Each structure stands twice: as C-alpha cells, then as structure tokens.
Amino acid sequence: MSASATKPLNKSSRLSSTAASAADSKAKPKKASRMRPKELIRFCRGMASMLRARLTTSDALKFYSQGHSNPLLQKALESIRKEIESGAPAFIAFKKSGLFDDKIIGLIRAGSDSGQLDKAFTAIGQRLKIERAIMGKIKKATTIPAAVITALIGIFIGAQCKVTPQIEGLLADFDAEPDAFSALMFQISHVTRKVWPSFVTIAVIIILILTFMRPVRNFILALMMSKMRLLRTMIMGLRQMNFLGSLNMLHANGITLAKSIETAAESVKNTPLYDELIEAGKRYKETGIPFSEAIKKFTSCDPQVSHMISIGEKSSSLVDQLDLLTEMYEEDTAAAVETFTAVVNIVVLMMAGVLISVVFIGAFLPVFLMGPKLMSSSM
Image (tube, rainbow, N blue to C red; front, top):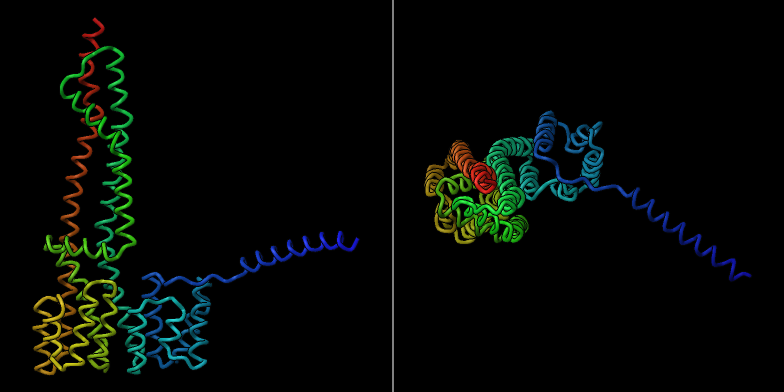
C-alpha cells in the first residue's frame, strides 16, 4: 500500500518540479543586446554632458538609466554602475555588460586612463554619428536595389514557369505551329523551369556563405576592390576614416602613440587592415622606426596617410595632421558614397528595364503573335 501511495506522489513531485523549472525559465531575466547606433549615440552624448558637469561615472549611469523606456537596458546600465562602485575599472564594467563592442570598450579604457572619460564619450558619439550617416547611405544604395532585382527575378521565373507554358499549351491544343520567335521563348521557358531550383539554391548558398564566412567575404570584397576603383575608394576611405578619427581622439587626449594605435585599430577589426595596423604598431613600438614608415611599409593605407603623418612627426604637429587627415577622409568618403549611390541607381534601372522587357516579351508577346495562328488553324 505504501508503494502504491508512493507512485502518485513521485509523479506529482515530478510534475511540480517540471512546472517549477518552467516558471524559473520564464522568470529568468533576458540579457540586453547591444545598443542600436541611434541609442548608443544618445547614450554617449548624455554621459559626456553629465561627466563634463563633474558628475561621477556611477552617478551619470544612475541618472541616465532612471526612467529609461527599455527595462533590459536599464538593468544592464545598473549592473555597470554596481560594478564600478565595487571598485572595478570602468572599461571592465562596460565590457561585462555585453552592450558595447571592442572599439567602444577600447576608447572608454583610453578615456579612463587619461582621466578624460567625458571627451572619450564625446568623440565616440561624434564618430558614431558620422559612421551612421555614411553606412545609412551605403545600405540605402544596396538594400533597396537588391530587393528590386530579387523581386524582378522572381517575377521572371514565375512568368516563365506559369504564363508561357499556358500559351504553349494553348497553341498545342489548336495544333498551331509557333513562329520562330515564340518557339525561342518556349525554349527559354523550358530551360528556366529546369534550372530555376538550382539557380535559387546556389544563390541562397552564396548569400549564406557571404553572411557567415568572413574570410570568403573579405576575399571577394578585396577582389572587387582591386577591379573597381570607386569601390576601393569608398571602402578604404571608410576604414581609414574610422582608424584615423579614433587615433586622433586618443593621441590628442594624452594617450601614447603606441597605445593609441593598438586601440584605434579596433575600429577596423574583422578587416584585413586591422592585422596590418597591429603589425605596423608592433614594428613602431619594438624597432623604433617612425610610425609613418611603419604605415608605409606594413599597411595598404593610401600614400597620403604616411606622408602627412611623417610631416606631423617631423614638425611635432601629429595631432593637427591626424585631424586634417580625418576631415579629408570624411569628405572623400562621403563624396565616394554619393557617386557609388548614383552608379548603383543607374545599374539597377538598366537591369530593371532589361528584366521587365524580358518578362513582357516572354509572357505577353507570344499572346499577340498567337492570334493569327489560331485564326488560320480554325479556318
């Protein structure tokens, strides 16, 4: 009797533990994801203004997080504040939150080391604002055209697989021979129906490879940059702008050049330029060669970068030269993006015109040519 009584109790306990674990999983707080660029810019500006007003980092985080509309972000900022109050360095506390990438963490660390964290947040906000504007233009120039071309290709495949076969079948029902042009359109339809699944599969695989395999993406991008001068100007301009802007901010605020190079290189992490800059910084630090020579020998930066840095080293005006270089690349990159956008728009219009013409000719022109055939066959 005791054994029979134990079974339902065990079953009940198992059900209770399952329900409890389910409740615990639901109650487990979610981790805040990284800030969106717009929110990150707002955060950096808010922190900079409060730190300039002589508030401590802890108090600034407290005031910014209070009443924030995102509860997950509010909790994450509160955890950063508690870490700092417990004695952890600011950059360690920010890094543990998972809200910021390595580039932001490096700049926060540099600002803390130099005792000018407010200037670090100001510079981060300014750099992010410029990067966001340029990247927004690039995405607009590529995302919308890609969506339009994809839709037109889908319409073409649909017409070749649905509309054209119906026209061919209608001619066959009337025992009418198609003219040479219609026969060619029917052959194209036959080929399209056979190859479109493979075409779509290959296209999806290529997109996945480019999305998740960074070495392949970097190789293809480097190949395209070697063949297209405008693309190289835009991509290299953006990378050099990020690096030089970060380097200028760090070195201008009292960080040693060797440390500034290492931290500023984080702004181009996951690109080939990152390894080149790390190597250049290492050679500069260990061998004592001028940084301009290290940039010239070990990186793919434009010649004007090493030239103007050399002027800055010789005239003790490196900060001024870095500031001038940053402004130059901001202007050049913005101009290259505008040109790239115009070129992409022209190419998309041409491709759209071709695809629309092919859809119309392949799907509707045989209908017009079919009329006389059907009339002659009925007579």
